[in-house]
Length: 205
Image (cartoon, rainbow, N blue to C red):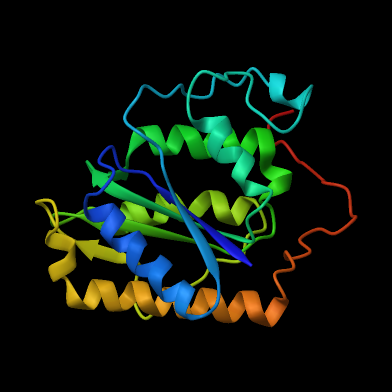
């Protein structure tokens, strides 16, 4: 089994990477493969709600950034961890754009698979960023993997996350719980609605 970890920081080896690496190393000890994918620091498009991806499911119509590269890895992954630095109490905007577009265009490849979010911050705003990262998982029938605390690591300057002993322990506990869930389910996604059709409802008629 394999866990995809998305590094949503513009810095490839910063504090977000340190947190995700702690998870990856702990997963390896549990016999679970992992891959950390960096979103890069090039421009990323936001979703324009064109719904062209519904005509050709599996990829966003915009193919000039990293979104579809990451989205393609959903198919070969049994679980997902998304890590982000905190900007103004929110996740990195580029990461949110990627998640929104990838989930909308290729949601069937990730739906039902266990997921977890990780927020890295200097001081405050981590809980609101953490909540924002978790919300898409719940719309995709993805069981949210918990830890001993909210998945938060503190650090401002590059490398300072390695000094947050409790934060890194939280990452290891998260990895242990993720490994347990994957082994307990055999990597099988949650059924969600199963074969029942979606019953959307609008409140303005």
